[in-house]
Image (cartoon, rainbow, N blue to C red; front, side):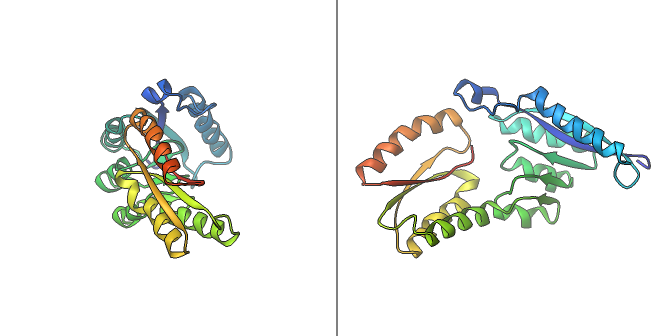
Length: 219
């Protein structure tokens, strides 16, 4: 409105992930809301944004259920009528495009997204961190530069689905630098399944003589 700028913010409930120990201390729902509220209070104390008071609409989502993230994006756009969406923790995959493409809401994130999303979002995706592809290639390049992989057989652990093209680029980069690489792939959509897969992958790494493991995982 002329006096208020309203943004949407996700409140991440770790849901089933908590059952298998995948939680982040200090990031329970109440803490997340407190962090955002403190930012809003500080911003408004300095005059808001462009002279408008900053307000927030919250939507609680389950990090293990992407449909709850998609539904939140729809609600931000159709019900809450927010100007933009803020992501601080845990929003991943196609719900980003649900906000940025389907609802035409600027998606402002402190995490980088997979490289293909930036073009698909047509300017509606803004991240403070580089894309997943740039991040993992920078990591591999620097580790190679300092000789970390010399004489090593590298196990590369990454996830399937939408993350796979960017993450698998590390394998190609390792081979281009003359290193041996063994791949291990886990589920990107089911945390409990991914944890079970790790045991099998670890055994495979050992049987193939892997003596260095590079983690390129997100969930």
